Amino acid sequence: MDFLGWIAIGLLAGAIAKLIMPGRDPGGCIVTILLGIAGALLAGFVGRLAGVYDAGEGAGFLAAILGSVAVLAAYRWFAARR
Image (cartoon, rainbow, N blue to C red; front, side, top):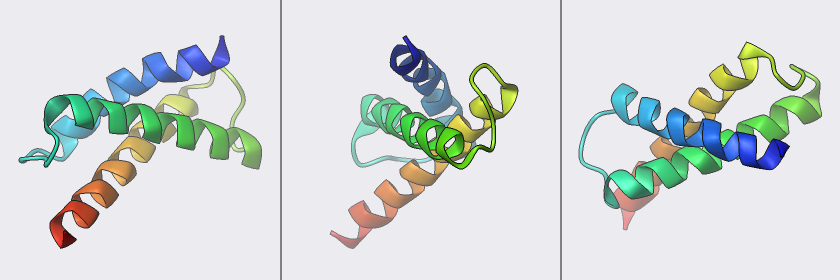
């Protein structure tokens, strides 16, 4: 259930990341939300592995947003280099 929870949080975090970083994305809105899911999963895994927060804490949602923004920025950077 934890994995599915991070996917649900990633949907919201991807939408928030799109609001934080407006502009044209090479893949559109769907790709941005999928990148948000990937960022949330990455931030959730790394944050819990490092012991920064536990399950159910608000810091996990903030980490998901930051992870989504980071993955979106990396995607834009790599897409622009192509």
